[in-house]
Image (spheres, rainbow, N blue to C red):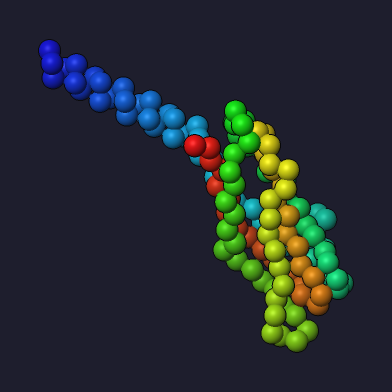
Length: 121
């Protein structure tokens, strides 16, 4: 009887911990390239931005913390030395957020890809 109770307790703890973990973390990918609608990072000079809207599969109770990573960048500059870019989040809410990719001066971005993680403690 004690072993059954212990086993059931461990099983329930694992079940609730797994569900809690699954509810607190969401992940996804983002990308943009010269074929994406509104993409202007490969043209012109000066500051240009491109935004990607992210909607969570399940809304959070409060706005989560977001971590972004870039895992692919196809870019060029006239001088061939410096590629200028910045990837930031905007408007983080319970339901989603915007990823904004910016470049400036003579940098040209032809494609960018990355991942995001959203979590609450």
